[in-house]
Length: 394
Image (cartoon, rainbow, N blue to C red; front, side):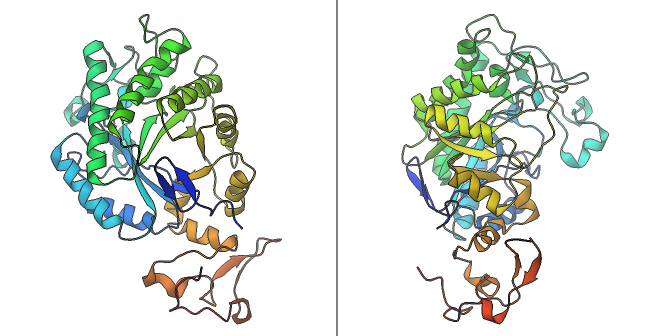
C-alpha cells in the first residue's frame, strides 16, 4: 500500500491523497479578475491526480498584488469570477481546491514575467504604486522604498486578509493558505533583515511574530472550521542575519495554538544577496520534518520533489504528511496519475481519458524499477480483468 496515495484528514476535510499542487502565479488576471486561462490551468491540475490543488497567490487588496496581472479577492466581481471557476473546476475530480491569500508587501508593484526583460520593478509610467512593509527598507537597490506600516495600515491589511477569507469561503474553496514566505509582507515582519521596528512588532522573535499571528488569528476567525486552513512559512532566509528554522518552528507552534491545520515549509527570497545552497532533490524536506516532529502540526514538504518514489519515501518515512509540487506539475500535468502508476496504485482517471489509464493501455510508458529505463508495457503486463471502458475497481 502506498503512503503517498493514502487519504489524509486536513482540518475539516479529507484529501484523497498526500500530493498537493503548489500555488503558482499565472500573471494572467485583469483587474484582479480570473480569466478563461485560470479555468483551463486549474481545471487541468484538478485532473493531475493530486489530492489538493492550491490556486496562486491572490491579493487581499490592490496594493498587495505582485503585478498588475495577479489575482485579487477584495471585491464582489473577483469573488463572483472565482466562484464560477470553483464550480466548474470541482466537477472534474474529487481533489480539494484551495486558494492562497497574500500581500506582496515591499515586493509588490513589479513587472509580470513576460516583461521582466525590461527590469523587475514597475516604473511610474507603467502604473507603479506605493508599497508597504514593516520598515522603510527596499528589497534591493533600485526597488521601491516601502512605506513603514502604522497602526491604521496594520489593521487595514489584517482585516483585508479576513475579508478575503470570507469571500473564499463563499466562492466555494475547500482550503485557504496564508502566504507568509518568500519575502512577501508577513514574512518581512518575521525576518530581522526587513524588520527594524522598535515597537511591539519588532526586535525580539516574539515581537516579530506578533503581526503574522494577528493576521492568522483574524483569518482563523473568518474561515470555517469545517474546511482546511494552512500557512506557508519561510523555514530559513538563507542569510546569516535573517530568520532561522528556530523562528519558523516557533511560528508554526503559534499557528497550531491558533487552530491552523497545516504548514508548508518553504525558504528564501527575502534578501537579494542571500546565498542559497545548491538545490538538491528534497533539500527542504528536513524543515517540514522538524516542524512535524516538534509541533505536531501537519507538515507539507516542498522544493525539488520530482520523482514518485522520492515523494513516497518522504511520506512513508514520516518526514512530512504531504508533498507539494509546482514546476513538476507544470511540466507534467498528470504527475499524480503517473506517480500512482509508478507506485503500483490504481487510481481514478477522468472517464474521458480512460483509454490512457496505465493498466488499460498497452503502450503506457513505465520506468524499470532497477534501471530506470523507459519501456512500453506489453499485453501480458496488463491485468486481464481490466479494460479501458471499465471503472476502477475498489
